[in-house]
Amino acid sequence: MYSGKAKDVKIYENNKVKLIFRDSISAFDGEKKDIIQGKGEANCRMSAKLFEILNEYGIRTHYHSMLDNNTLICDKVEIIPVEVVCRNVTAGSFCRRYGVTQGLELLPPVIEFFYKDDELYDPLVTQEVAIQLEWMTKKEVMLMKAVTRAVNTILVELFDMISLQLVDFKLEFGRTHDGRIIVADEISGDSMRLWDKETGEVKDKDRYRKDMGDVIQHYNDVYDKLSKLSKLPELSLSTKAQVIVKLKKTVLDPAGEVTLRSLNRMNYQEIDNVRLGKHVFVNCLTAPSSELLKNLNDMSEKLFSNPLIEDYSIDLWFEEER
Amino acid sequence: MKIGITKFPGTNNEQDVTRVLNCLNVENELLYPRDYRKLKDFDALILAGGFSYGDYLRAGVVAARTSLIDELHDFIISEKFVLGICNGFQMLCEANYLPGVLTTNTSTRFISKWVNIKVNKTNSPLLKGLESKVLRIPIAHYEGNYYNTEASIKQLKDNSQIAFQYCNEKKVVESMSNPNGSIANIAGIVNDKGNVLGMMPHPERSSFHYLGSIDGRSIFENLIEELKC
Ligand SMILES: Nc1ncnc2c1ncn2[C@@H]1O[C@H](COP(=O)(O)OP(=O)(O)O)[C@@H](O)[C@H]1O
Ligand SMILES: [Mg+2]
Image (cartoon, each protein chain N blue to C red):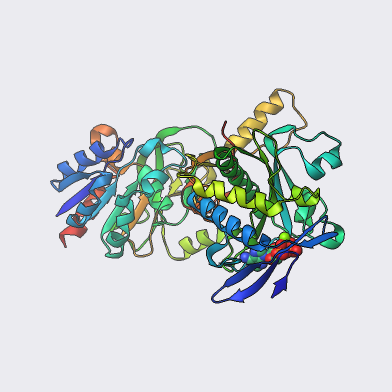
């Protein structure tokens, strides 16, 4: 169906695909290319492990199961052509782009979007442009950002348990046949930066980019340490949402009128329309997901607003605690 | 024959309704939100007014999402009578048992006063003998402004579902007599079958001479009469 720089995608039964991890490795948008024995397997099992862990925390991903050493069975999705990068510490292209030194802590973590196109060298893209060019919708961006921050919180804590610092990582998202947005592609040493907390040793694809050697040994070391964990970090993830309920334009807003007249009496003559609405803040005890957003829609329609006279809009986000 | 009177946290009109029913010698019982399984034991239900659940979010909406009001669905389908007064009318609209919604009075004030309402011809037995009369009856509400789309208002008119309209003493429905901004001066409506009546004015507060009017009493009398046959 499709063959990329590191994986093949093949149609599998009922809305699923086989994601086959090859031993090919590349960097700098495909300029540097090699084959490394065992790399496919390493990334395949690492992705499976991380997807399974994320699943435990309620993050919705495309992962179903591992078919063999280098094949994952996943939901077939339409990949959103915008990669989401989340950075806890400055490194790589961020340093080059903004002229800052490596290793600065970013709090709260920074989220960046990149347009997935090798010929254009995966350019940085603003949210506004990506929406305008219809690469993703407003609603999708909202979900992708929230999910990415939730994933970050989980992975930071997870790697901390094995004394590794999650510097940054990349996620891809896809649309399922039934309209959900889920995490897709892979999460592995190829798609993140990990530094040893004590020694600063690099445990990720930078070893390949910078010809540091022993790429697979380090990938596997991370995997082995993760496998030895007897329990996962104790986290209670919550998603925040706010629903704004507005009276429809055609409906008279007596409270808004009174407020407007008050403003005019206070000599704010430049105001000619005031509408008062409602603001509902909701704390949800689950990770962000399309399902949660759908539930919030239902809540808004059934309780927060009366569709006859009111419209509503939903904002959803994830806040790192700490 | 037994009539249920709903009591939600924050409602305060159930005792007034109870007094009227006691006076008319009809068995009645208060029904609390958790009593939804008992609903089948009743022949009619009166949703008494007040400020259920503090009228938070929108008047009547929290009550409208309780099991008791959910269960009303089958009760209404079986053509038993339901009378929603004030907050009870708001609940019926929020639960979609009656069309439309009651929003903030255009004056942005709580209005408590005597009004006149004209009774229109409908198919509801609850209004039997009252057609084209004017009732003197009190209102007390903050959200009594009946709103609906133009198309739905037309439909209500065409189906003769507009039960009451605010009017002057001479039975003229005019804007001066509209206390709250309701479209078409609507003070109460019935469903298409005529077994559900919702009204903002309080018939239970105009059922005794000592209250200043007995114009509201006929609605309860009609209800009891219907249950007898
Ligand atoms: N569940 C999925 N369904 C369909 N395509 C997917 C899925 N998961 C990942 N993909 C896509 O598979 C392709 C192959 O991966 P990769 O070799 O990394 O390609 P690329 O060179 O485009 O990065 C990528 O374009 C990725 O977006
Ligand atoms: Mg890729």
